[in-house]
View: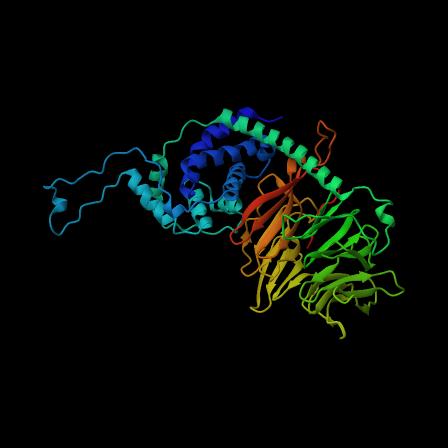
Length: 516
């Protein structure tokens, strides 16, 4: 049961620091109150869970800043602060000795002028550094807490403004009483909006189903290769293929089909497996062609540069590594001595793992054993390896390696960013996002209390997530009997990380997927 008294006490103690922090990172006065109220309402709805976190302050500030990051950031350098009550600037008398030649009168500033000067200095910082300074000096968070809130490595926080001046400016900002009733009302409104979203998305799905002619003349599992499937012309709201609720979404069309085992993006289409281990290719126009077999649940790897799809086929007398040219339809195979798994395709090389080690193979040549095992992904000049202590991100060209926490890894197109998972790597999970060049941890784009069911990179420095509230995963059935959580398709631009929710998925099915 939610502890309302504890939340009210926390709000009373932290509200002034929270609101002043938002104002000094660049929020306009009216927007700051709205951002704080919205973030606190989310915390109120899951307050018992927030209390169980290691650091309540870090959790609350992370949620509130996530609300701020999702909104359009105003140009902070041009923001004029609200008038701050204070005395008029004092003028030195003409007879003051300090005004005589050879001496310098001390400059006396009112809080409003001091605030304008400090904000101008803060505006010269990057948004992340400005937030770090304000969180540390105004909110009173430690360097470790600031790192947790901003999801970046802990580091010394250097400020371009005097700490005492920033404290004076902060305390000069008048703050009204904590809006407990407004926060509770907002939390209830959020819950109502979520329920309306579920109903709306179910209705939208029904429209798609009706337009597609949902029924087929025979079960999809019996459909042989090259059988036409139900296709609806519908633009994809994100730049990656994804599967949910029996629908595969490509760049320009949506295809109705049974459950998908693995999904990989290829230009405007996708290569995928079904639950029986059949491998398929869905072209951008929706034509689906069977191209091979693999173990159910096994990974397929693709490359846009060569239009190759690769997988391990265990169905023959000898297991084979298959490289399928999606343009020509031709296969190139390599007999394997035993079990193996495909790791990645990078340009004209295929990487695979066996019990004897990891290998690199250029079709038509002999495979070459790599000098170490544990390879997770390869992209351009970047590689990621599994390590007993986490993952190791290696920039081959620059001979730079960084060891970071995480289980499993996926490199972005171009190899500039790395996605990994906290915990044991199973879904749902907290994503870990790193800059592959520096090893620095980046803000993931998920708020506290949210988990990802899947995550993948898209083109042009983007990352997409299937996000669900932690509180709804494994929760009892809703009043309508639905046991599935509300899942949101979210996409984020990287460097800097700016996210927005694309579409809610009311009934995404047992295993919604994003194309890697």
